[in-house]
Length: 125
Image 1: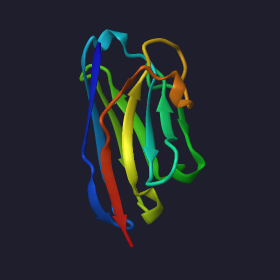
Image 2 (image 1 turned 90 degrees about the vertical axis):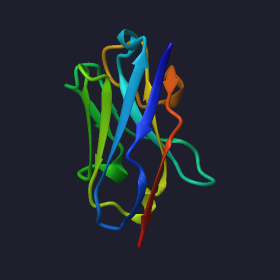
Image 3 (image 1 turned 180 degrees about the vertical axis):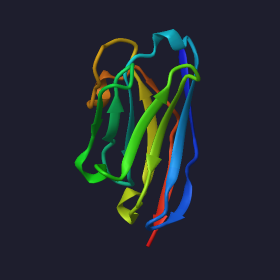
Image 4 (image 1 turned 60 degrees about the vertical axis):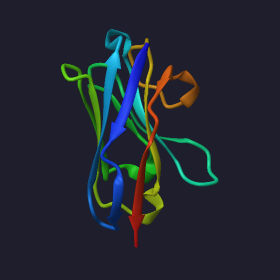
């Protein structure tokens, strides 16, 4: 099994930056594509960004393009999400996800096998 633990969430003001981390443990050799999703109150869980195993291919949802950056350090079994120019509409619980196979990236939550517990990000105006 694989365990994912997010950290780095918090309360910030609009325009600020924040970096989320997702540390993987357990059978980390099973981790291939990874991604970040977010869920605001009363809304569905949406893709934010995704990355393939090597980090050579990435996807960003339109609302975060140019502001967020996904990266991974496979030697440290850690996924990162750098969030710049944060907006109040970025307020949500952010989830890290991992899939145990595949060479590309995945944007649909149903294709992920492992999930973190979530990290709250609140952006005040």
